Amino acid sequence: MTNEELLKQLREKGFEEVLELIEDAQRGNLEELELVKSLGLLRDEALNQQVLQLLENEGVSIIYVSEDDV
Image (tube, rainbow, N blue to C red; front, side):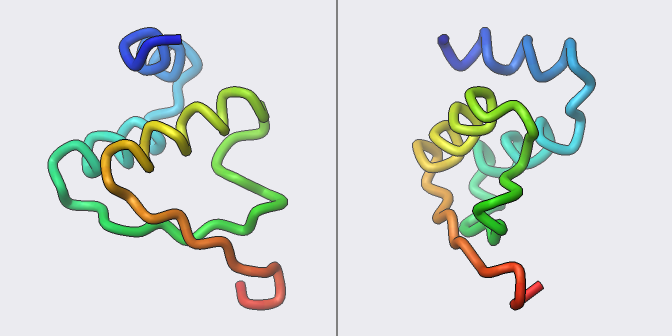
C-alpha cells in the first residue's frame, strides 16, 4: 500500500489522531513516540504496522515501554 492509500484509509476510518501524528512527523515536529508494544496505535495489526513504518520513514523513533511504565 502506498502512503497515499494508507492516508486515505485512515481518513475513511476516522483515525484523525493518527493522521495528526503523521502530519506532525512530516513537518518535523515529532521526533519520538512512546508506545506500549502490546497495544500499538491501532487495533488493526496490519494497519498499525504500516503507520509505524511510515512514522519511522519520516524519522520518528518508536520507543516501546512496558505496561508497568504507563
